[in-house]
Amino acid sequence: MRIKEYLRKKVAFFASVIEIVISITVLIAIVTVGVQVVREAFSLAGNPEGHEGFTVFLGHAFNLIIGVEFIKMLAKHTPGSAIEVLLFAIARQMVVGHTSSLENLIGIVTIALIFAIRKFLFVPSFGEHSAFHKEEDAAGVSVEAAAAPRQE
Image (cartoon, rainbow, N blue to C red):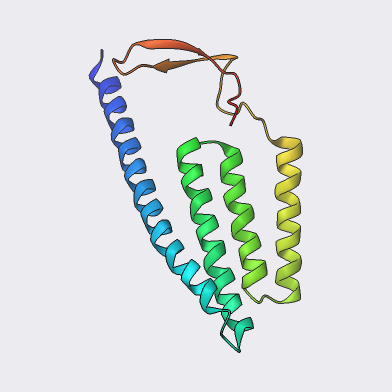
């Protein structure tokens, strides 16, 4: 094996490890903040000015959802998961951000464009070269694996 290929594999491996560490860190933060958001929801019941507290609560809840979608994007590495993160981020800005009518219109047009791209231009097998793709097992031996869709 040439040194260049070896170094590329090592760099890709370490980048994957760093990505996993970041995902775990974000997940821990989401769980921590999630507990606080639950407490915040219960405090809304006795608050006479609940509408302002609800807006804050909604912003925190959207942030948690965006964080979860971000983790899924890092784990799956699919264009679809990236599109979902964008949709939630735009929706959060429109719902919580108290934006102007023009900003709302731009957000709606952006979401419509994302849905159009997803429907007409999105290729589910993006990044795959054929019906079969190669995977490496733990020993680094190449194994042929069917590219059948996973059922969740």
